[in-house]
Length: 570
Image (cartoon, rainbow, N blue to C red):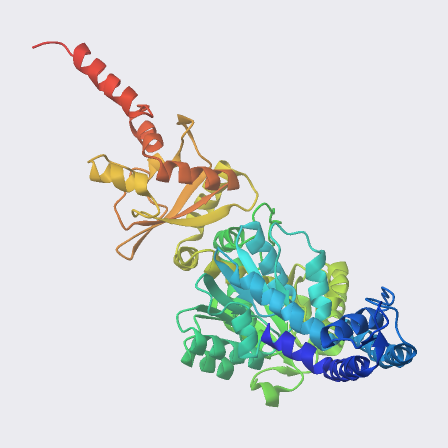
């Protein structure tokens, strides 16, 4: 607010000075002009009367000659005063209109409004430091899950897209550079309800600057940052960045997961998707010899993960001396000669992983002519080329944006979800398939909600009260419909954490204890019903014993008296 006031005073300094000087001259002169009152006696205006007359004259209102008819000298001076005061007045009006169109003032007002909106938040929220493809997917998913976000993005064109999307909650945004600490502060880095900062710009240096600034301003705040370079990632880690996301490493890991554990991959995609969406069935990469074109960061990650799955790879690289590729065929892969040299006709799959979209499309088109049965993995670098890649319809299109968004969601929805997914990767594919079948039977094929519950007095008072009274409260009791205890809710507990010891898909008969943390997976309706069980002792008692406790003390007293009388005498 101070900056806005300072800017207004600075822009209007000259017209204000002109108005004050012209008014002062006109008022003083009018008090000196001789006049005559209604009795014919000499009369001069007081300073107050002169101020009154000049004020309505300068603003062109005109109340006439008051309190007495003016003398010729007074009329002559008023004529001069009209030109002396009206011109600066119109000059000031023109400057005010110009000021309203001033870019700097509008930016200052917008910035202040944004900061005020963030200050008024009464619920947890995340700060997204960009609004590219990854962040837009993330914002949509978080909004669907009822979580608030604010956005800092330097490009107005991207913010225009944000204005057009349909969201449950209004997403405040600021057109500014997140690298500046004052903008991070306006976005709520120091707000007590800020849950974390997500830096997903295309520039690793910007992400590093944001991560460092946030950790210096609020060390306990969660920070998730994107980095494609190892040295930048190491720098981020040294400042305590909580999660560093490298999309190429993630894709290589997921590609390997598809090869050896499709069920685990499906589970990961399903639990980190947008609730309500339906995931398409994934293609399974074949095993055999693969040709990898491009040995940069992406190609190295793919080769490393494929070879970890005992899959043979042949590398085609245009500049092996720069990428450190010792055993490769030199070339870009866009020409048939190089592909034939790599034995493309006997390969089962090809990865077009260069940093040039045109070359990647050319590689797979040429390879497809030589071997139409190839399994095609293609890397998309530019978002505006999406239509071209969609037209080609590769088996897997590597889109860093979606990979990053899914990984961020795993950490943002609940720390337990990230822990569950990490533990799930160490399980067998059969285990993952059984869990997927259970989830589909319970909730259908749409992406479910996932949320965590801590068993304590603040979050689950009913559970704590019944445990203290000696009742056995189990996981099964939280899975029953409070309207009809014989009917199950669309709910599956997928992780129970007790004393930091995880229990994947806990047995429903497991007795709950204070301090337990449970990760649930269920429908949005079930998520809204569960607090009724956790917070209402009467509801939870009905689920456990089938007994409906009267609401009022009088009815409870009458019920206890009736039970005593109905007991058989010994």
